[in-house]
Length: 242
Image 1 (cartoon, one colour):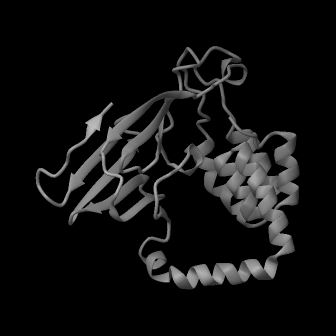
Image 2 (cartoon, rainbow, N blue to C red; image 1 turned 180 degrees about the vertical axis):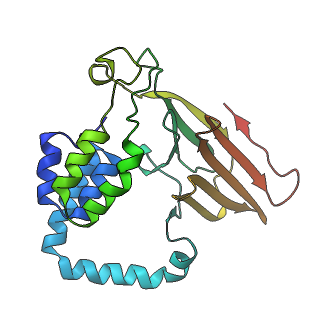
């Protein structure tokens, strides 16, 4: 899915946008993100001074939180649409976590459900070259980073029938929605976050003095998506799964 780093658009963006922006394209590989990044770069050039002031205000306003969890995305309200949900995934299974307290939604997908056949198209050399590619990007050596990514990050046939990895369309479409109906639209102290280091999507909120926690992870060793729900008061959890 998305715009490939090896595409002509990827080459053009690598030459035009700053190395930190190109890094986002390499990591997320999304057409919407590519458009957003291009717009962000235009704003960066036009409003450099204003942007620095805004960043400084954000840093000052959130410095205490940043010191505690510098690699955590967090929000003060649930996701209103898919693009705002927080992702977890293990390479085969993935979920977008909305963090809703009324009826929670986990949009789940799985790599083979629409493609019709399972096969491993992962490039075995990708892990060995990831750090090298990152260093090249941060060193503003985008062409060299592109060359490594093009050679060692694209899908390979491996032990699969010849030509299958590059000719098969891997759709990775929605498998299902998992709904958790908490039935609570009015809550206090709401917060949802994604711990990027540990891959945990956490939602917390308080109702009548009871604090609820929902943690979602996608485990690669266990090959599952797991949801852990807890409350500060015994017997306080009341939810319907569907």
